[in-house]
Image (cartoon, rainbow, N blue to C red; front, side, top):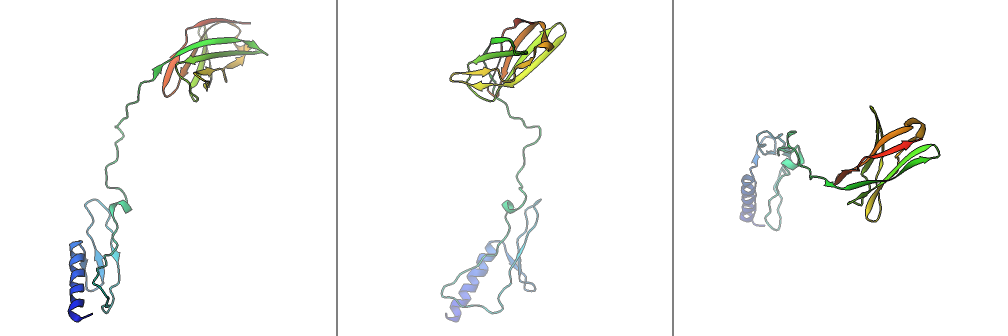
Length: 186
């Protein structure tokens, strides 16, 4: 490479680094970039060769400088007061389809029309006078409905007498409560 070609390559490299916001310090060979206000400052150091190296074509090498994505984000985060509005739940029909005593256990079962899904919660509530007994279980998907029955049982001796029974279903998408049914538990 001719001497004038090497000088052009150095000049192109200096202009490119200057345009990128880099400055050179002759005493330490470090290049720095000012950090944006409020962001941590980062600098990268690269040792400069003591003698220029000749190459077949002029090129400029940029130093590696940390970007805001390499460190803590400068973008604002949502505040605690921000809220996401939930979709209203669909109202579904819940029906008590069975109840009775089997092997000393009072059992409750029902069906939820209008939704077929797993993961919702079925709650049977027995009330008599000032006493309330709550039984909770998972809804189970069937072909076109959701069934309630799993976990809806209690020792019959604990609930003997006349009770008002309701069955409720709640999920992320649906909710509903049956009409009250009067039950006599021996």
